[in-house]
Every structure is written in structure tokens, then in C-alpha cells.
Image (cartoon, one colour):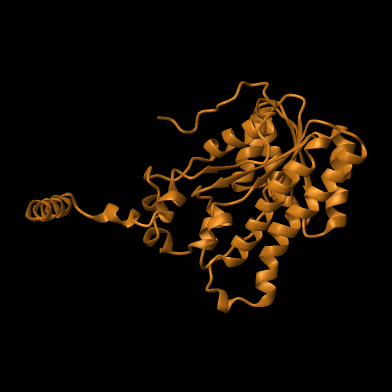
Length: 294
């Protein structure tokens, strides 16, 4: 099966204006590309303007769409407001906010400084809050309807995870915000949803998280029941659906796309997958003999 196939019809996002934080690379770039293919006008933001400009040129050439690169540090509310104003000035409106900007690193928590912890909290939680608040206020003040917020979280937002505690803490906050605003802001015509991706390797992020030969030692595909990692287009397909009008009745949901990874880790006896067939035969024989002798 070709997991890189596109899902929606070509005009599914025609007339929509979308802002994607962290849209210049990795999964953000993949989603941006597909949104543009589906007819959306897209603004991408990050702190690295040069990378954004290169991405915008590349995607415009590939899709024939329009991509606006805007430098913005989502940790600074004033910069978020300026980014929103620049998007509205260019396109006339904004329909969708996709909070994708993130930071993470693997470390024993006791090795982290307070500033290191704050760095992740500020990008992920404070950044998502800043964008959500600025865009939400704009839509509500202007009485604009049919708006959407989509947040990229993670499965350990609800399970927690050792060695990525700042990220788990921040993503849990984003998930709570998603569900809370889905109820509170529905009356304003604003939907809020989230996606929790499993392993979708990206060059930059995964090289930082698992440098050197660690990627080979910790083959994340082995943790997934489907025995593979995700294709970027699969995530883009899901994101495009959730921000489209086809998902107009989906509100307050977090959709997991991880091949069953977190469920495998959560089950108390899932490690029994490693038991060989012949041992199961032996265990079954032992159980049957006990039954016969009782």
C-alpha cells in the first residue's frame, strides 16, 4: 500500500487561510504543502526567516499556491499579534490556526536546569496559548464564524513519559486547553481539536533527540504494532480533514495516529509478545495438566 497517497479532493481547502507555526520544516512543512495543494492560502511562521522564505519559494513552485513566510517567536505575545496582523493584511482574514511549533530533548529530569525546562514549556505551552488567545480574541471581537484551531500534541500528553518531562507537561497543558476551549468557544463558531502523532521521523528533530547510532539502538518502529513509522502524508491527510468543513461536527477531539504504539506500551501484559510460540505450547500444556489433575 502507498501511504503517501493524498486523501481529499483538490478543492477541499479552497478559500481557506491557514497559519501554521513551525511550518518551515518537518511535519509542519508536509502539512503546509498539502494544504496548498488543496487550495488554501498559508502563512508559515518560526524564528528562522531564511528557512521560512526558502520553504515558501519551494512550496509555491511545487504547488502553484500562495505561502507567506512570517518571522515570529511564539513565546512573545506582541510578535504573535504582529504575525496575525500581517496575515490579515495579506489575505484579508484567517480561518485556521495550527499550533505546531515545538521543542524537545531527551534527558534525565534531574540533569535539567530550570531554564532548560522553561524553554520547552515556553515554546510548547506558552506559545500555543499566545497564538490561541490572539487568534481567538480576533475572531470573537470581529464576530467571525466557522474558525478552527488544531493543536499538535502527543500520546504522552495523557500517559506522561520519563525523560521528556518538560514536553509531556507542556503537551498535557495544550491538550487541556484544546478540550476546554472546544466547549467554551463553540458558541463563537470556533472548533478546537488536536492530533497526537506517534513516530513520524523528521531529519532535524530526530537527529537532535537520538544522535549518532542511538536511532539504530532505539528503533521506534519496533514499538509499533504495525511495525513501521508514519509517513508524513498520513499526518497531513488527517490534519487537512480536521481543518476542513468535512469535519464541521468534530470538536474537542484528540485523534491518535501512531499505529497502536501507545496502547501497546500501556497494556500490562503486552511484553508477552516476546514469548516464542513453543513456550506458549508448553504453558498451555502445563495449564491443561493442572486442570486434569484437579
